[in-house]
Length: 296
Image (cartoon, rainbow, N blue to C red; front, side, top):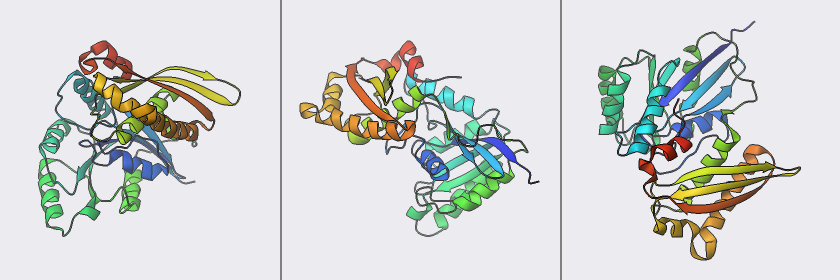
């Protein structure tokens, strides 16, 4: 009988290094929020990959960076909590930019943790020549005790087979921790709010920074449809106007795209009611932050 391995793998890296893209590629469908903007992920998301001989629980963390406001402090607490008690840490770096101040900050945090670590250098398809990669590898090998170093393109799938093979080898012997058909450990409310927030950030370009939050107010499950009521929070009236758009076109676009993804995730028809509210300086308000960020 073949041995079965199961374990928890934390993905650590600066915002937009490709953590969510890597997980979505492994799982085979979108299970985590992906956006070109930093701090797309605000909560820890647990995604499950079930294989014949192994089960990997990927912990997709918010990007590490020095906090600028109370929201950032909560997000960093979420990330720090995620790196303790797991079986393996994947530190992801962007091959295009080498080692930035954000990575120096991350390395300092990871030095405090004894968990085995892989270095995963992503976006190698965007780099010409190997000099930059070799310099980065040498520097990181001196800075941290690394079990493995992998060069990948999470977007194109380059190098993922070998990475997956090594991940499984480092997991402890264990039966599956989740049923084999489970791909994400999250509530329906959490998944819905993340899908809506992604569409807001994707469609508003650079006009709306990360002063946007989503809260699902109610879900009514009827025979053939979920009726979902959700609020989108921003900090200024001008941002509310951008999200609503001329004659309501932007909020309709956001709602349509979010509804399609929610229907795909839930496997049922959805009616989505979206409203936009202004909540000034919400990123500095503890009570509100705790209502949207899960701190264990």
